[in-house]
Image (cartoon, rainbow, N blue to C red):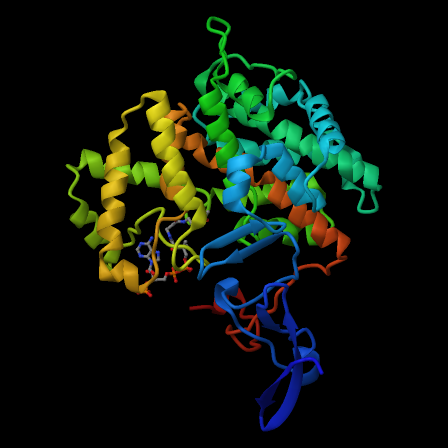
Length: 429
Ligand code: ACO
């Protein structure tokens, strides 16, 4: 007989089924709770709430395990290309040669964006945050492809939207950068790899053509893979919830970009470097900053430390730390900020405040150091995260649609006024 749990409410016993995942993690299925008992659950930040069953990414926060479709993040980061990982996440299996060739070719065919979009960029002030530009641009793509707005779109239309998104995000991201630099747009080069093409669009100038450096290309490939999915995090849940209203995929991803922007989520990579620079400019007194982070009257937090799910270590941070060392050495970059990061990590890891709360460096702690070495400006760091996370958002959206999940609509416990009568303005105090 399958397992159940008993819940006693006001002396009456109710039974609810237990759902078990493929890695033996357990959940109480309370989908009939309100109908049977009149009660709802209250769970700020959804710390104990599973919003779905998902077959995409497995994450064990206690043991620092992360797998996409069963493959370990360590192995994928070492051996795969970003587009292979994107295919794996979206379609469930690693592609064979024919499938990968088709996927790459289709994405290559869609890298251009409509010329009218240049006018949108022109309207943004110089120095506009690239995440704001990117979110708007991705949402506006839906206006160029109205078929994407049809909730009953065909599988072919969905496929096209998916390929267009993967193809156009690097183009739009590099255009946001060029806009801020005041440099002319560089069009995509379809003879280059996904990462190579992006780097060229970023760094090529009419006066100085850019040769793709294989060290930089490999580092970027690895970073994008490490960010490609992370189960039901804030931005992914946003994509699924927005998509659950049958809003189109472009708008759902645009909402995901907005959610990722926050400094408690993807925006942390920008905040980490800004914090490390402030520490350096302030004279490098690490203890002072650690004390600030521990002080409950001070809103400062050690950026790049802590994670909702990882309470022992973040496996991505380990890979990134090693990659940061390698990339800096291969490129011959000596970044004093890396030394501050390493010292800060040591001080924090030996401080009982951080140890007791399970606060360890997360993926964002070292990623910014690599981006700096690749000459990517600080305000573009979260854009780089978005480039990596896109296949995850798409895979999760697709799973939600295929599972025919209901519209995401949490409940609340109302704590406001009971009914009262309207008082005309003249009679109010
Ligand atoms: N610095 C100092 N104290 C911290 C930090 C930090 N970075 N993170 C958590 N804490 C403390 C909290 O003050 C709290 O202490 P208390 O128990 O004494 O009240 C305790 O640790 C638990 O923290 P919560 O905020 O309850 O944990 P939650 O799971 O809600 O937050 C989060 C996780 C948002 C990542 C948090 O650790 C944080 O703000 N980190 C810094 C921002 C960051 O690096 N974000 C990137 C996350 S990775 C990603 O999204 C890609």
